Length: 247
Image (cartoon, rainbow, N blue to C red):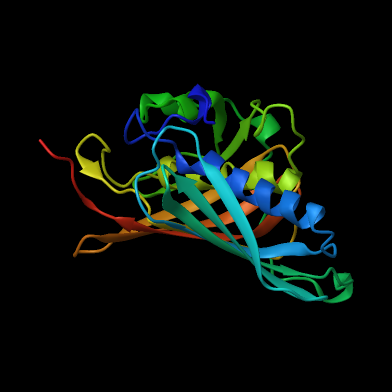
């Protein structure tokens, strides 16, 4: 059951997708524990938003599509009012010691401890936006911004969520930190979110180094290099549907 802390930015009677994404990761991890699945690392998770995420009670169904000892594919589906609303697939792989050959990462970001909080609610409304602490790195430009985000709100009341689930619960915010156009005049919600990880993130901060591109025929793309306070951990992409706000 959603609380006021997940209120949407585009409409007050919708859930913001960001915490729901983290909850899906949490439920996948819980289902794997209940099923005594082997310990693995989530290397990729992709979410498809199939419709309006209504603000109400919902279920999450988890299924192992491709079991394995070294590689596994898991699917999760969010059901609201009997209708599939979000579909997610996650690839999990076994941990290997590859420290000797690791490399190729981009530069790290300025520590959030050195930055002041930014009132993101000056740009966006909603209970989710009000619940997060955002700290900008440098000066944002049109369609280009970098920021740290954290939340003091537990993902699930009465349950311990993993660092990964809590981290993913903030990633979808990327589409809101590097706005290319005024959201009171243009809509650009994302239809999906895909996260690739080459290192498991550490909390409590989620770092977003984000660029937003609008095409000329109603499509857009938000691309983000993901960070924790140790450095980069992976990338995320969101495809956007761009259109004028209705009068």
